[in-house]
Length: 363
Image 1 (tube, rainbow, N blue to C red):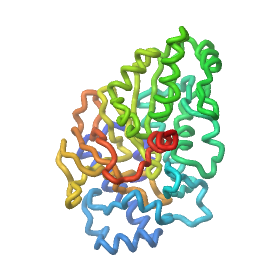
Image 2 (image 1 turned 90 degrees about the horizontal axis):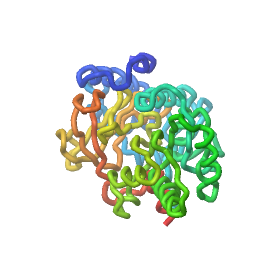
Image 3 (image 1 turned 60 degrees about the vertical axis):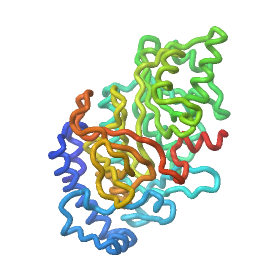
Image 4 (image 1 turned 180 degrees about the vertical axis):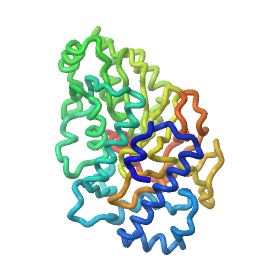
């Protein structure tokens, strides 16, 4: 199945059987492509005894640990076809993943992300507040997951402002003017979880105490990038939502789970607080003792598969996160496919989310 055929479908329209068939067909195609074009991937597959001709289901495809992209340059296209190199978040001294994109893979990442996000926001572009600083996106040829996130979500904004300056201070006057100019319109906000809390929420609290308040009750906030620092400050998911509503009226808030190693295939949080796998991707929970597939509700290591990566062998990856599948095809929001939760990072795994990496530096 071609990526264009998958793109023609509504992103949460397939039930378990239909999606399983689609993923198996597409991921087997990608596996053959990477076996033929990435010598390192072929050697690793041979080392574990994998034979693509004997595989019957996408869950049989071997997974690569995400950490491998920090240790090896993995690509399945000639070097001259690489148009962009993306890097993961990392604290000082940490190695970063390098993800090599050709024009087609980069374009498909963007197309998938548009389909997924518009299912939650609608197709109309909105005035947009980016809760970050403009300096993050300076180098377009090689930028971090944080910059990639900002640029990716910027597609959904008609008129855009950065809420913070390059010293990470809230631009109060700029925010006032922007909200006044777009009064009565639905506003899209995007940022990374810890930065929203540290530089936006806390500043709004301080300003409210001084009699200055902002009404964002018609806004929709999309945020991601890790919760480690906030959880350490005893700020839960529910508390995060409650506090933002109190300080500025924000009620429509969606977290998302994603990684630079599979950009485009983000997992958006629905109105019921569940993360959802679209037709472009899936999550499989693996038991740490033997990597067998866990049952619904059982905690294990998260494996992610994606129909997008053609320029690098990133279509089946084992993350360093743990979580659990909560159900399939029966979320109250009406979206089909698996829905799941993230419990956090595996013990001893490096900090890697944009929020957590920044929080570590901020500390």
